[in-house]
Image (cartoon, helix red, strand yellow):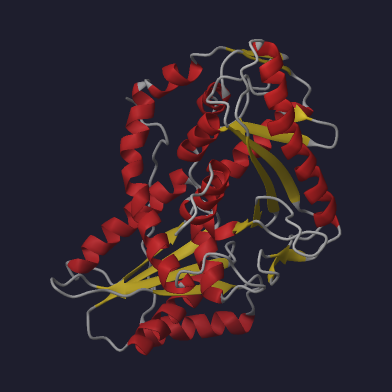
Length: 402
């Protein structure tokens, strides 16, 4: 008979296996001492490390609400803060993640440029207890309850968007601007999003009302953004398919990443707005390829990555498709010298009743030599790869006018 899991265990499972952080998450990693748990979740997305501590505590009912709130904070929040600071001390002297089974996980980012974010998630308050966050003595700690974290997880649903918000809050704290929060985390998030994913710098004090979020999500521009973001989930679907193929059900990474895993992580680092543009571009290209009007396309991502899309008919020999994809990626790198990373995706033209497959390619080449240039020109002349590429610029607002 299966034992029921508690809310904190369910939370860890959801974050590590079903959220946008799944490609970077380690559940219950090991720290100092045999089988001693370091924290509940460790996220490693170079150069960022996120330490999660999750505590589930019910609120007592002594008849004194102030006492009950303080007791809950001490048990749920202070306990998490202590665990987070302890985990950070261990990470400072460690070289890599140790997974829950004792095996090695990915190496930690280089100490010279790593960024550590501390997140305490306190479950059980049912949204009744005001949440406090800030520096508890050894660095800024984000504190969420289940309601506020669910809002963040839903609204900032890519690893890049999520980390940028954490960084913005940490910088706000360092600025020593007085922040008076009458509402919840969602109201602070509304201020951040409304000002272009930053906190306005022209004020010395913020007084944040408890209705900012409700007003923000009812704006026509916000609703228009949500409609426009439908295209971004085309990209999510591609990432999901590739993830299933590459990882084969194993979410946690070992001590090294394959080239396919590198490519997958780069694709998954694209933020929501970038995914919208990439998804729309792929969808448009796929339709043209289905009509046999194009064979390949280069797309310049917002993250300084060049993407190459290739679609061939069913029945093409797979190794030849992979070879062409590699050649086109190489030419694309030479055409766009300022971009050192190229990701290639190849699949089949749609035919009713037939399936499809994906090939993915990762090329990182920081230096372009004269010999590279000669090989590129040969590939263009011999195979016709992007001989006369036509450039098309597209402008789109993240929040379209409602």
